[in-house]
Length: 214
Image 1: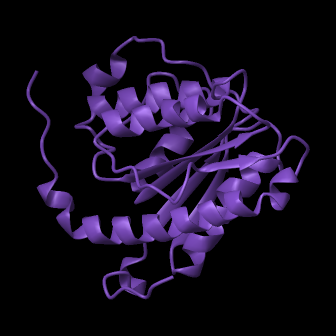
Image 2: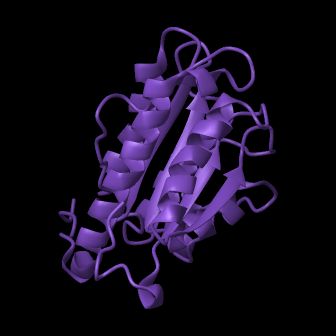
């Protein structure tokens, strides 16, 4: 990767990788960590968060976050707030999921619904961050899972970088993605693109367009 002048030690970027799979050490985790390891090699601070298998409820549509506007969800008894707080600090957010019946896991859906809503209630707090979806799949349905995560990013005024192909790795058994050379190469290319895009937009953060007042 490149050594960019704006990515010096005083201004290290921070990336948060979230594993939405309840299978710890499985294919999704390997894909997320491939992205994080590549970013770490470019001087980023990285952190891995385990979401799959943790207690997290779906959004209750109570709108208390719009009343309080304190960056918090009204429900503090699950995994959401800790991950949300880390996401607020992050320059780049990588959310990984396996493909369950052509979709994301229940934990990922709960996270993205609540994260998008709480951020919206607090001045669109995700705007200007880089967001990337990573999907592990046995055979089919991965593009729908990929799109589901990206929809939250795009609705939140985040920047979604591309890679040389879909950010997908193929495998069924634990660590099968080790044999998917193209998938792993895509993860590394994604990391390179995140590094470039996040570094380029950081100086423009104060100029990010405001949302219309509807």
